[in-house]
Length: 173
Image (cartoon, rainbow, N blue to C red):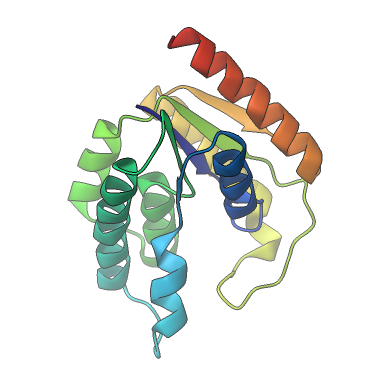
């Protein structure tokens, strides 16, 4: 089973690309659990909420992996939780970093910030997208995981991503 994480700042098309890739490769994708959780939360989120979101995201990924055909796309990963926690609260649970170092994605797709910002009640930082992009890139490099950058408008992103995925599939056949 190959696993691809779509990661990066908010409003960069992660969910859209995850859905498109799953449809294109006739498999499933793991949605971002945080969206469901935060949507029903009737108070500001806390560090404990982010820890719960991280655990539920891992459980959802494990569940979806059993339904995947050859490749699984994940709309988010623990790197998102780490950066989100660190930015919002100045810390993150120790176990998140430990698990992050153990993630077994074959490839990360780092989404660029060149798409127009789309307002959403759960999005918080329209003015910090480049700052976060640079942070994601540093973290991926420090983790020494395979990643490729995806930029351009929606169709360009899909075309680049499928090229990357096709290359990945060829390497693993």
